[in-house]
Amino acid sequence: QVQLVESGGGLVQAGDSLRLSCAASERTISNYIMGWFRQAPGKERELVGAISPGGRNTDYPDSMKGRFTISRDNAAKTVYLQINNLKPEDTAVYYCAARGIEAASYDYWGQGTQITVSS
Image 1 (cartoon, rainbow, N blue to C red):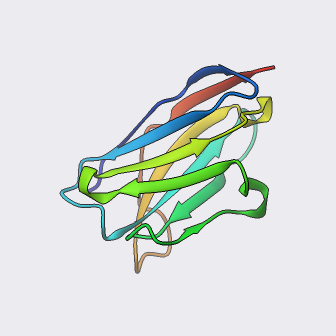
Image 2: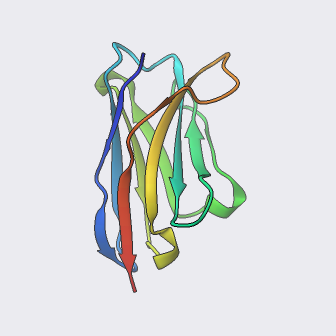
């Protein structure tokens, strides 16, 4: 069982930057692919991006390329999401999730952290 706790959200202005953190309780997360997702009010949850277990590879949907950067520190059991030039449409609850290398889906989820971007 992997417990994930996100932090770093808040109320910001358009154009600001934020770095979200996702701290894991597991002894090690180096065996997990880690992903960030978000869900805006009235919308479905969407993938922001993911990072490979060793941190060498990241993958983002086309709609997320450019302003979002995922990184990880396995020694600190923490994954990060850097968001630059925040826009009002980035307002959402942001979740981190973990899945095993062989898993077909993300099995472990955090409780989420809210980002609200004012124009």
